[in-house]
Length: 82
Image (tube, rainbow, N blue to C red; front, side, top):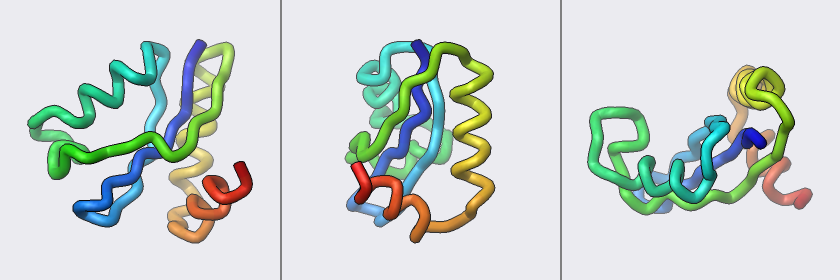
């Protein structure tokens, strides 16, 4: 199973959209470690939304779709409707 997910950091008041075909909890742990990537700027990321897919292609496609909106309003709408 693969997941498209949205993380939120209160520290930097930012959302992050990603996908993984690994364990989502383990992926979150990696986001919360000190590293040079985008999510390395904070260590309080929380999963606020996720969708499950059968294939990596579907999960990646959904990630790109969400990111293409470039809209915090759209992301909040997704989260609120769950």
